[in-house]
Length: 106
Image (cartoon, rainbow, N blue to C red; front, side, top):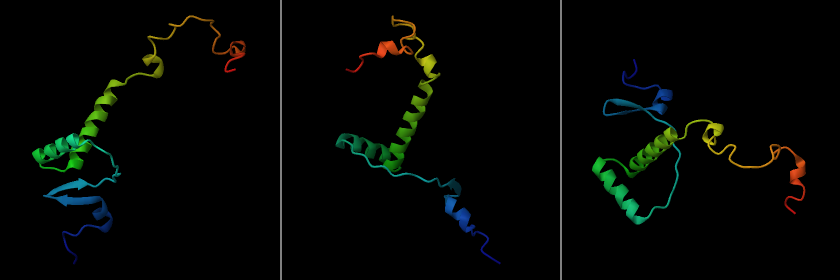
């Protein structure tokens, strides 16, 4: 009989056990960036305060920023530009009549 705590090799590749909790391991990408020394010190301080790594602090900040930005942009392109549509004077067929392009770019 095998080890009752053994994990199937396929499962083992995608699951790790930490302090009795199971976390799904996701594929992560590595990036590199240059930071001013003052910002690096702030990140180090925050990581020590939280008892975590600098990577987790930066990842958390980026996730918060992306979530916040995602909520601000709503509506279609037409809805977002709605307040400027029709604000320019000109011929009604300006975008389709080729005669207006004669000599353009010369």
